[in-house]
Length: 234
Ligand SMILES: Nc1ncnc2c1ncn2[C@@H]1O[C@H](COP(=O)(O)OP(=O)(O)OP(=O)(O)O)[C@@H](O)[C@H]1O
Image (cartoon, rainbow, N blue to C red; front, side, top):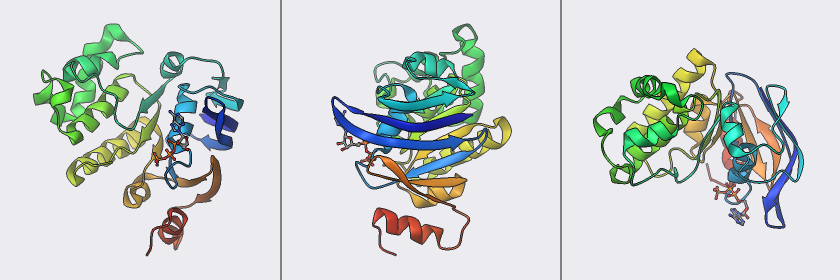
């Protein structure tokens, strides 16, 4: 469903992605792992069209997305939950969810109701400004807003950063459910190896703007391999 070939991108005139290749099937989850500044966020942003494609191709469901604006990529079924969440802090939870209904605004109420069945913790918070939620609640809202766009592929950038374990578990449960019930495809940037290993079919190790190796989470010694790659002892 997604094929990225030879993708090059960066900031200003500074190259970051130096020819990234990856392919993702429907219902598959791949993780991106790597040390700080290696290009993981840049890769998600380039797939989403927030950064220009300098070389290579991003193809979804057989159609090239090169030259297509972020909004059109969202309409093609890609959802993005950026690091730092980028919520509308002064708008309520309900209004933020409404803003996410990019595919079919006229059916927003029904879609929001559906998303709230997956994220019931947001129900009592619907009238509260997003800026007055806890960090974990904001993360759930960011995921909920993304799901309101009815994506079939979501790009998640460090969803567990700085949040409590119980909310991490809720996020994992929702992702596992959507993957198995709706064949949602996921690209997940995460530093938390347990999280990656709980959900990913493959983990791609990103180094200096390209994919250095592919790790099979089911293989013996794979967590040690991952820790060695990002420089964690033990
Ligand atoms: N807005 C920006 N303008 C210029 N350079 C940037 C910008 N954002 C990131 N960079 C640079 O691009 C490189 C890759 O950054 P990126 O955020 O993709 O790394 P990352 O692998 O996601 O790291 P982290 O784990 O720290 O989030 C880094 O050298 C970074 O300093």
